[in-house]
Image (cartoon, rainbow, N blue to C red; front, side, top):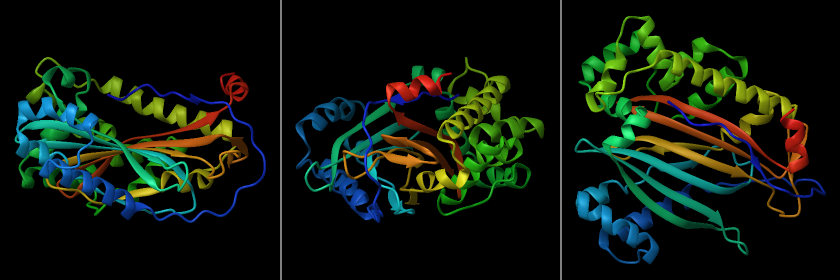
Length: 324
């Protein structure tokens, strides 16, 4: 469960110093997504490239289901002090026991710096996909549990209800920095599966509901959490950074609300300097930019983190030092 962690490489020169940044773009981003959702519902104003991709999935699942899979979450800017250059929002949906992932890709206009919704797409998750990414099945199965049974897990699991994932972001990041497995087991989906097993609660059996030939592998899940801890440590060491240096990037956005049927959200965020000729400084390291990729799951009233990955956009020379 999880994905390969990697560092992005770009070449850039750095000069000058950064000016103070104040960005509050959550409403702008949300509006662009809602406008596209309305266009898909009414069938007017949908870009040709987007419509081409929607045509085939519409035939499989129908227009009403497609419309439900395009009701977006609400994006909130929670730390305005960092400049975001690119953003990819992905959301997961469970509609009539069918799973979907919808994506909204944003980039800045070169002249005005206003956000542009550059691409929109949706994918219906097939059974073969669940064999390789069983977390989709786990999230769906937990979400379909009877409410009273699900909430009976809460005291044992250490889960806490929350309106949005914001309280978990910094907590999860600090736990990765500190290699705090106890905290990770209470705030992450992977940790919840391990914690449940330790308490005699077999959440792993839920995977078999949708993927009979795939079993929960506690060791693989443990290794995945350790991989995230190791990667975080390496990036922090490269940046010569403390947790407080990274928190503004981790806390840049949160989710204000989740629509019906939506059970997961993923934000892939690229931070740069508004002046393209300049880099940014994270910790004590100058670089072209910084990235944060986080995903969170909402089940009933409970938010759990799925993963939180930080990365540097660095020069080839810097990458050689980082790999030593």
